[in-house]
Length: 191
Image 1 (cartoon, rainbow, N blue to C red):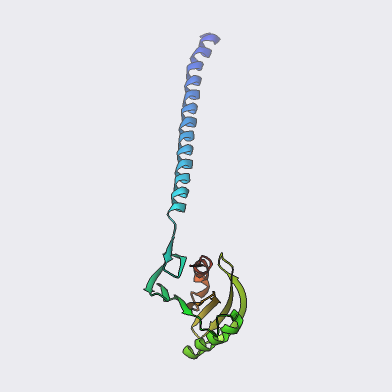
Image 2: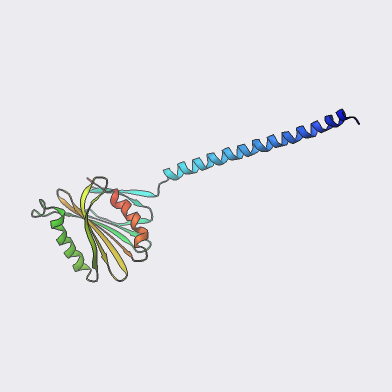
C-alpha cells in the first residue's frame, strides 16, 4: 500500500471521530442549556410560590410564615400558633383619654404590670426602645424568660390604639422562630 492510500483510509476514521466529538459537544450543550432553563424556571416559580401569607382585618395587615396558623381572628386579637407550641398574639386596645397624649414609655409600665401579673414566673431579661415595621413605629421591646420558655413583647401606640405583640416559645425553639416573628412584626401595617 502506498502512503496515499493509508492517508485516505485514515481520513474517514478521523472524520468519523471528529463527527462523534461534534455530536457529543452538541448533546452536552443542549443538556447544559436545558439545565440552565430548568434552574431558571425553578427559581422563578420558587419566588412566585412564596412561603408567606398575608393577614388583613379592619385594623391591621401583616405577612406571616406559612408554618404559622391563624387560630384566633377577632376584631382586637389575632393569634397565630406554630407546631412547636409557640404562639404570637397581637392585641389591639383602645387608648383611654389619659393615655392618648402619652408616649409609649409612659404607657409601657401598665403593659409590664399586666404581663407580670398574668405570668408570675416570668423574669424581665431586657427592655429597650426601638423602631419597628416599614412604617417606623416607635415601640418598646421587653424580653421575658421563665424556666422553660421565653417571651418577646413589643408594644407601640398609634393615635388611638395600643398594639401589643407577644411572641412566646419554648427555650429550644425561641431563637429558631425569631426570624419568622420578625417577618410578622416588620411587615405590620396599621389602617
